[in-house]
Length: 475
Ligand SMILES: Cc1cc2nc3c(=O)[nH]c(=O)nc-3n(C[C@H](O)[C@H](O)[C@H](O)COP(=O)(O)OP(=O)(O)OC[C@H]3O[C@@H](n4cnc5c(N)ncnc54)[C@H](O)[C@@H]3O)c2cc1C
Image (tube, rainbow, N blue to C red; front, side, top):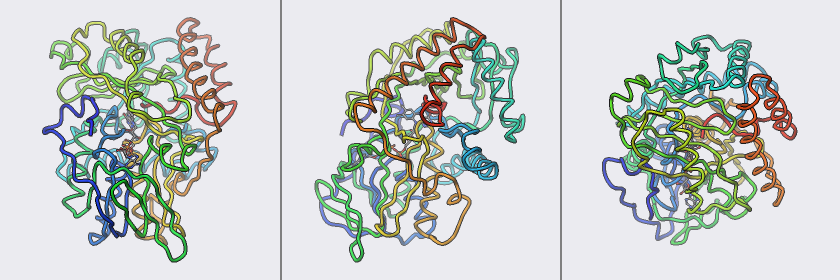
């Protein structure tokens, strides 16, 4: 096992020791493949509903090895698709219901972790998205107006004039910012490792260094089966919770694309710096460029800062060497220093990892009662809260199939996304979208408020699907 070289991993209270691998045959009620937030929250929620359930988690490395132990720690109510698309597709009532579930889930995630005795450094300071050129200011102001029409109050999303924004945090070239309280920052590795300990204490059997090579759906009279390098498992239900790694499983190559997001962290920065730039309430932050960036002030007073820009790899390949990209790391450092020119100090950590993007950018929670196959994922860059919500929905579906709950009513439950195109179309389409986003940012900076760049970008972005081409405001 090679621990991911993230800030989060290296600031855990104690080193991670892998649990034993599966070396035999096992019979359980629910077998979960993948020890990230989705797999571990699902086990937690199943045990809450029925403590006697026999559950195992099979993790190819160690719990938290994937995106759950490496992310930006934005615990937000964001969703990969825009509000307007959701309203058009599902109607105002279902949109509003989902919005409220996600907003409540930000708070609930913190409470659930605290009740389980996990100190994940959860602090709900909200999010600022700063406008750093006229086009961004125009777009952000419009987004606030649009949100009013969709029922958001000033207390959900507000426009802050420059002086108000600067009181929260001072970023260079700020022209104002939007502010929402519906986001907390966390230390993700503390949460995911804490969760694995909680699950284990409840009787969930966790096998690490256990690579699942095949998942065989059940048929009439035969349970589904999970095959690993050292053993196998029969279960009533198998939950696939492999997110960005999904394309590495047989038959799943085109289910989602693995999209790489990369991060850097600074050394702890002095109090004098924080007195100058703010973030007194630990607001998470971004600006409104197309090629997403995201940051947080950590509990130990560093910046953890990430962004997109890494290329998609032909054939949806997932390899550890893609977790690093010198060009993207340099770009992130340059952006961070441009945002905060007095920052000083050096970059202490650089890392990255794959997240999963479905073709229509709609996450999904799926249970097939005929085959015993279940899955949850496709959260793009918003998986911290979405994995919690998806796990609750999944536990409800598995334990009470005939009862509708607030979670099973969500539009992405039992939603099937279509598969991605075959190569080389996938490679061409995705990498062109990344290029276009970069070009749009440059043009917006150059041309200013006439918005010409926005217009050509919007047209291209909506040409194929009715979703945003550059995925969701996080990660
Ligand atoms: C750099 C980065 C920054 C991000 N920032 C944010 C953010 O700030 N906010 C936010 O909401 N979201 C963010 N995300 C997304 C978020 O982290 C993920 O959506 C979420 O963690 C997904 O959790 P998961 O459990 O579904 O998947 P993962 O955490 O990826 O877990 C999947 C697990 O499955 C295991 N696995 C895979 N294949 C097999 C196999 N064959 N056999 C056994 N085990 C297997 C993997 O080892 C892995 O541990 C970010 C993602 C990245 C990569």
